[in-house]
Length: 337
Image (cartoon, rainbow, N blue to C red; front, top):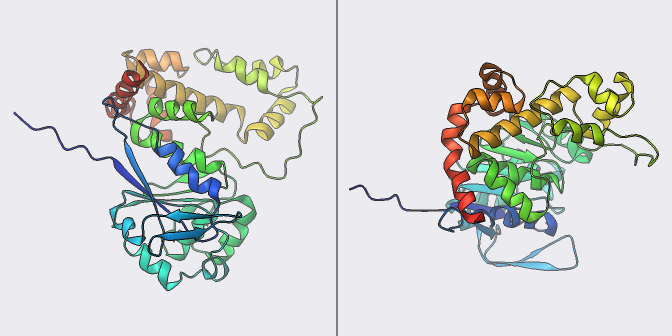
């Protein structure tokens, strides 16, 4: 009789640097501190560490935080997250690590997943971990990041970028999107949605969604595309034409398309595909419907069409996705009873 593998939660180590933003430091603890398996065991173990021995770390507010772990904690991490700091010194000014920071990062084991929130990306870039790779940061710092690190492929327009073992996000709330995305990647949509529900945040904002840059507050008298989107979400299984969406808001197709992109950062067609992918993921995780049935209910029409879209969006087939995440969804269902 085979023994059950020893359970070990995925360890997330959050690197607290002087000048850190308390809000962003708290994001990983809030998001990764929630998910549990069917036995009620936490799926993640979240700890905070400094690059110095345990002690106080300055924040950008009028208080410091007491960090209980030194840099040795980085050697135990499965994922390391670097939140933003306003006191990066030579990292931000010259693009080079201090000796103390370099020594701390040197403790990270090969293969550890790395993530940065906002200008925490400068730390990963200065360490050479983003050379030749895509990355993002807060839109106000993107040009500077590109000038300082020309080998990094900076995309200033997205909420976050998942490049496999290295992930980066835009500022502040985009860090929530990034952490939820990692939970979703690790344990599926149902688990991530439960965390989002308990945190009272939207369960999913696609990483490719644009950052909100230089957009004036909309005139309250100006028509929006909100009703059309709500209408479409209730009919994803049906063919939806652009002219049908525009008609819901009494706009021309051209005006609707422009307004839609201003509000969501993507075209109506891209948005519909994103929503259908999310619907397919939910059905694959939470039901026993066949792949053909899921494809029809999600609005892809055929299994082949859905397979192509899931492969493009997630890098896996519907069958592989269901096999990977069905167990996690069952665990979440048990916890909700």
